[in-house]
Image 1: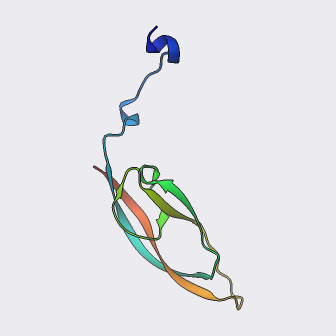
Image 2: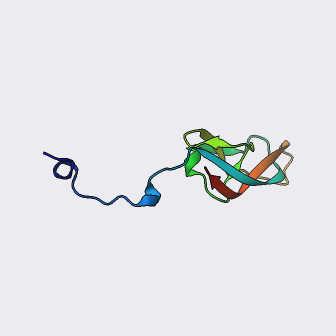
Image 3: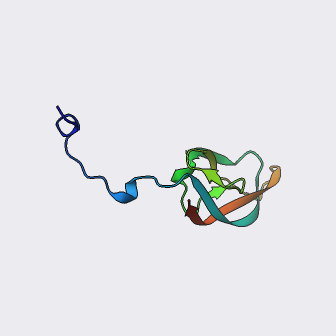
Length: 96
């Protein structure tokens, strides 16, 4: 019995194979004012980062690092307390 019999035949595209271990994003820094407590984030592996993702810190990552990505926030003219946060928006990704 060989692997083709067990798993079926499939093609592996060269781009599907990870040949890098460090991800070096290029960021644009932006300071925003939001309603306190309205920030929503999700965690994703660094190798899943995309151009346009908004992060709370700017650094290089290993491919398997857990990264906190901003998903949503709100701002209103109400008297609700406000807070200022700094977002780092990914403009370019270099993978080494």
